[in-house]
Image (cartoon, rainbow, N blue to C red; front, side, top):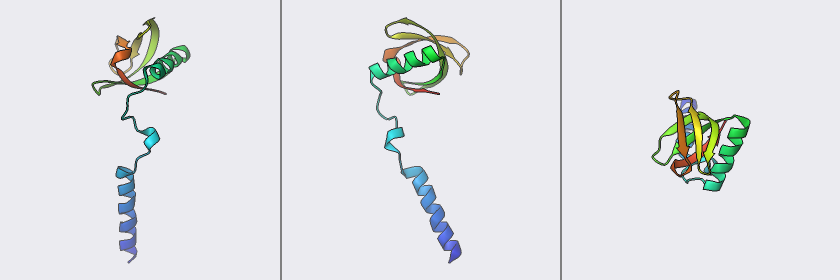
Length: 97
């Protein structure tokens, strides 16, 4: 009986791990462009690392070096060791570290 109870408890934990979602942490919707700019400006000013998710689903980690225009930033990519110009229209979601 004790084994059955522990298996039942274990299966509930697995179910909750895979199928219980925290709605506030899900990023299935794109962020507002104004919010993206505020996050990017804050990360630029404080030299924070950011995680960018692009419209095509690719992700990139890096640090912003400077802002070139109203909708473009220069990113020093941590993943690829390159410097890249990113466009605001290509960004789906931004998270800071």
